[in-house]
Length: 253
Image 1 (cartoon, rainbow, N blue to C red):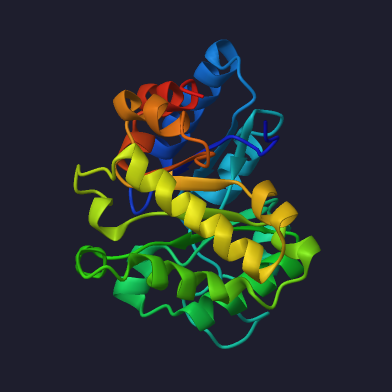
Image 2: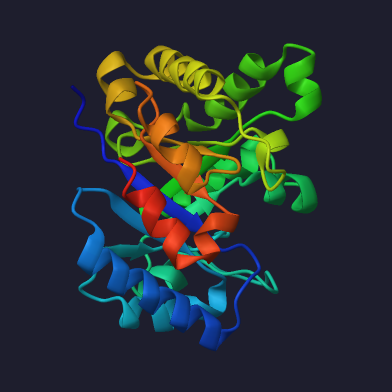
């Protein structure tokens, strides 16, 4: 039996005003404290405006907080961007990297993701590296090669650094669509990811990394997904915006 961390991560995307975010975080904390009896790690990724306040508000709780994005440069004339050192200065030690929406709308590439992963690790920030194929890529049987190409963004890392990373497999066709990959489809890809990681690093590393599934995860499908051999948790979108749904997913391990 593996000792990989079980993780329920909530990506709030561009939702929640400051007051709404405080309220949601408090609800999640209260429910986690009173109901969550397993050893699942809870992470939330709210918009930047919430990070400093929630880092203080959730201090000492079971909930880790991360940014939805990070800049690949240390500092400089990059208007609108936020650096790794800015995040650590307010107590943030997780970040998403390469979410499909960042790739789709903001032209992020495997190369820019690789640079973001390197700088995150340099500043003791855990990157949650998001990968996944589009519907067209799956229908044309390219899904395994697309995901393998995305994983090559990690190949320059040391064994020590890669072991600090989390991977999130999110088939783009299942994000926010209500369509979920079947548990078999999801687990098949998670196994493929471990095969690629074994080639890039070694089997010990590949078996130790937590790989999350993302794409319309809800309380009613979480248990089946989490029962699969290689699915270690979920990166949750819509359901993370409702405290009851988020906690019920976390209780499904």
